[in-house]
Image (cartoon, rainbow, N blue to C red):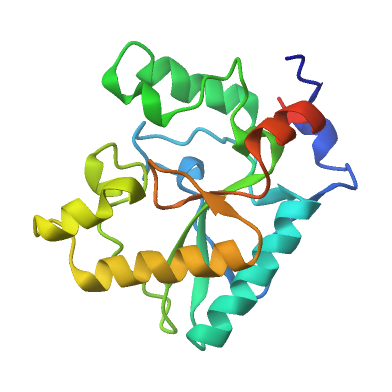
Length: 204
């Protein structure tokens, strides 16, 4: 599959990519723009993040509205949004050849984040407190995998409140048109990944 690319510097003024910094019901806490990530340092540098393709941004706004209706005062805390291909390669270089490679998209195929069509997100309450959904962001264990949640609950490794919060997050995102993946409770994509790779621009 041939993927058409666009440079990050051109995206900043491209009409199809918009900032979500001031979006109501959203709090940006971009983990790759700081040290609170599995690499342990800032990967974004001067790029402040907080961009999405307009389609994904519109869906995220709907998800935030859904959460407000369910839990007044709560917000979606965005942990990552548009992730340039240059950053994806840094992540891939860290995990390739290890068991953790299954959690990081091969940049040769293109991470859906690099199209501005994926978002990593969790929940915070009306006091701005990040909620406990069972693991940290970028946790590379079975505890982070939605496909394993019932088994983790039965084993006492997840509790009912953590699972209820994951289901609340999924409901808000799915009602807005996102879908999740089997390996990360925080990751949501705004359209079918095959369609995205075939039809959209990958940001380098």
